[in-house]
Image (cartoon, rainbow, N blue to C red; front, top):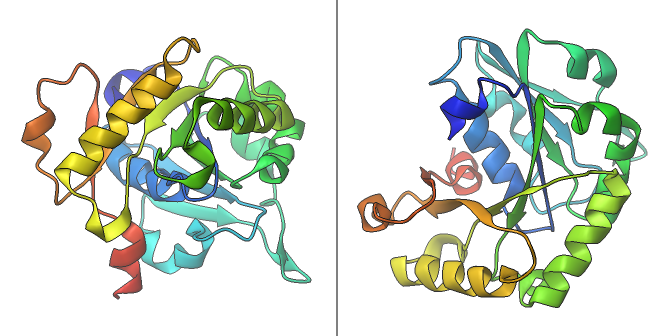
Length: 226
């Protein structure tokens, strides 16, 4: 999936409600894409909300010679949009990964960049964790997703399933959460395009599933430990 996407995409955007795992996935994708491209990867933190976890808080641990974390300064304790966003979005020599704030207010920031984010070389992912309160029903999922999309003026989103209960997540939690989300999205026109599983769950158990499955090491706990 990722190798194929890199043939035509240069910008990857991660949206979702708070607790969906979008910052986690932004970091995972940045590190995973190193395997498929020699280009510099910019992890651009556009989280304007007081989220549970923001990639800017782990800048020193994430950055290396190929991954650069771009985040705004703070004004009166409020994060600002990273400087030079238009120039970054127009740069074809780097891969851009945008971690966007976890609600409608966070997505509003995207609106001013909609012409680039709806371009052919950009793909927008929407993370859903079916175990979060805001994602417990089809109505809730569609309500918040539509509000976020409209606020950011995003035309299309691609769903990534992240059924996660934190450190206690087990195989059955992933399977049950995935089935829950499939049922909730049935008849909506949205399809799940990838599944994320924590790295202590056996990836081989999902080898026959008809969608890409990515095993990730949770960076929040990993980076917090040291």
